Image (cartoon, rainbow, N blue to C red; front, side, top):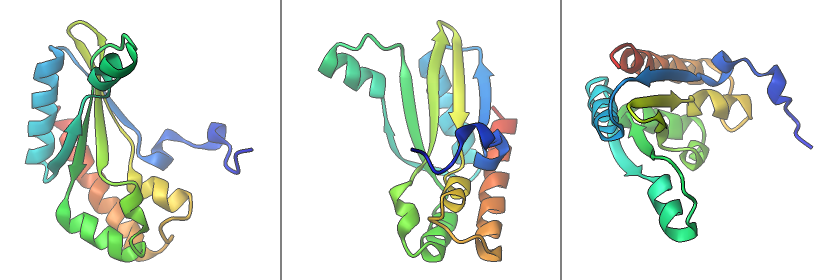
Amino acid sequence: MLTIDPAQIDPADIGEEQATLEMSHEDAIEHVRDVFTDAGFGVPVEFSPSEMLNEKVDAGRDPYYVLGACNPEVADRALDTTDNKLGALMACNVVIWEEEPGTQVVYHVSIMRIARLVGMAPDNEEMADIVADTGELVDEAFANL
């Protein structure tokens, strides 16, 4: 049994962001990577779950890609503030899936907000500053998609 009722969570509580791009899947991956890099994120990890699943279990999945975005300064502060626990949620994933050919959905939730919500991060001013800082970076990126 879940201790948190998902129906009671407002998307803003988890920093949910979503955008639709009218372009090919490959172009969307490049565009999202560039926009997040310009907003101050690095992308140290990226992979295609759809390619792996289609190869390993013949899943027949449409294109789906994960960019693991990270702002090193904020990540360092978050690790200190959470006694290293936040590393279990890193990097801040941005996913891109093909809704239909030529239409891509970009989706993100805030690991900082989720960590605070589930008790992995303290609910204090230092963590609130980290949440605000990452929120500004993500807002900038989504505004430029």
